[in-house]
Length: 135
Image (tube, rainbow, N blue to C red; front, side, top):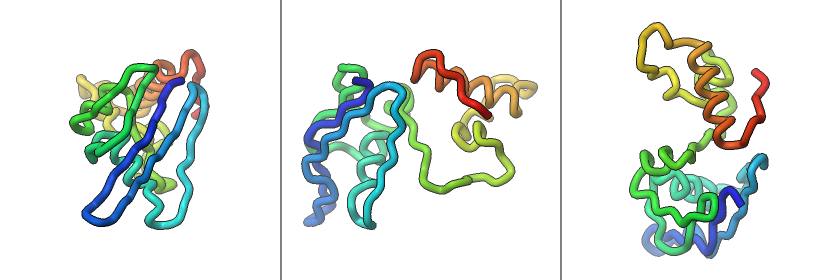
């Protein structure tokens, strides 16, 4: 199991945004969160990406329990969210939209499509084995 969420709970005052959410994700699967407004989709993503603290429940990544203090912790563990907007930045490629931070390469000469595509492939390869995305 790549990612496992068990018994997640989150409230905002009297409003219970998540109530006992369980979810499993295996390597190679694609997950889409679908539901009505107020169903808890954004809250679940915020908890998973370290933006919001988890009140109750367990997040396991490759069998190891995780507690993300912030978004940087989640990102260091390899968890990123691709948000629901179909195109965040019209002038960027698919790779650049998926990995906006990839444009922050160490050397100025490495900024651009090749650097971004290479980093996206490395990220995807580390997350899913040897599968190479089509651009």
